[in-house]
Amino acid sequence: MKKSLIRQLKSEDWVIVGAGAAILLLALLFPRWMPAMPKDLSSAGNWMSAGAMFLFLLVLTGVCQRILGRPLRRFAVSLLAIFGVALLSQAVASIPAIKRLGFEAVFFSVIFGLVISNFFRVPEWLKPAIQSEFYIKIGIVCLGATSGWPGGCVWTRKPRRCSPARSASAAFRPPSPPAA
Image (cartoon, rainbow, N blue to C red; front, side, top):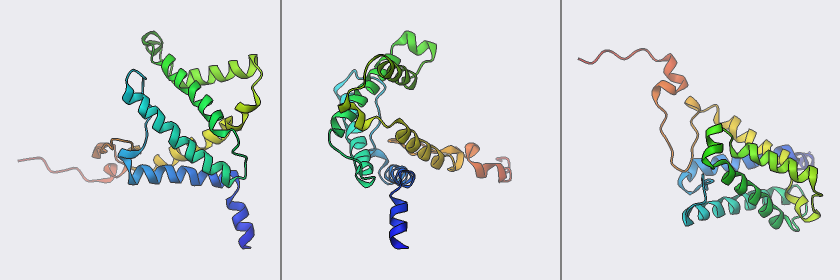
């Protein structure tokens, strides 16, 4: 019984739930320490933020890969290349003309991924970190977990307060008496 439970918790779906829970717990306990992807790379501080985000993702996904029993050989280099494509997507999306059209970095990440996978042979060294379904599932867990907070509040580097009008419980409060 105990071994089957441990084996079940080592499945990809449960590891993803654990990774999402870890992200949310860290964001809740240490909101100012959570890395954030910068909108542009125009300053040294933004490059440092991008580096912190890469290290966070490397540790998180590396731990997940280890739990799942997947090889970590060349994983860091592969993840760095994929992160580079994400930075390129962010840079393209921040071009004013493209920004006016409403295209975001996710769109360009998908386009770049499609171009690379359909027009070029993906090198073997790049394959260890190409796990789009894995990353999407972690994002869905995090997004789903935050939708239950009053007003959909999400803790980020700079926590914002939810206004009472946006909280779910505000709909059930009696109106306040008028000020005298």
